[in-house]
Length: 176
Image (cartoon, rainbow, N blue to C red; front, side, top):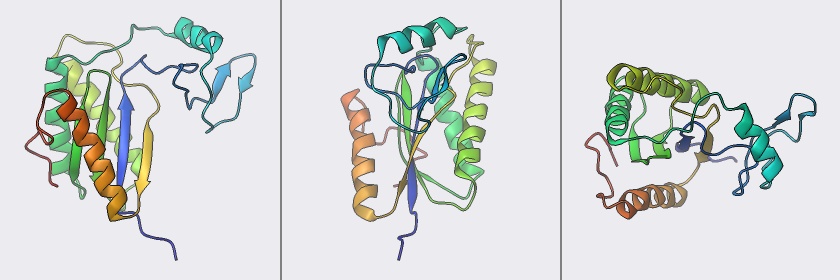
């Protein structure tokens, strides 16, 4: 019998910072217009040619979230949680990406992530001078099925905050 999902670990990367061909590997399926798609949903190894091609296709400069943008993201995540049946158990908002641990809910996960991302982007455009894209199109998400996995993910995300000199749970809306 399959275990039920108890939550999700979501990672959103800022625009232009983890391109196809990155030396860390990448999940993008697109190679280029002539070649088409290669092994969608597979981790591709680093490839300097592929990274150069992806860099050349970028329309905007890479984004790094500043303090003002991070404050906006905090407010939007709080508002999204208040309007939703799920709660946020851990979050780390870095200059280059964010980690989010949220409880299970029956809503479409991809739709929920898209909704949060659009709200964060809109608020950043309204509240800061930044006018371009904020997030990469893709996201990484993992389904969590048991308490040890939940605890390990929470510890992993909280360690990101501590590494940056913050408390493990620096945001008041986090509900462990």
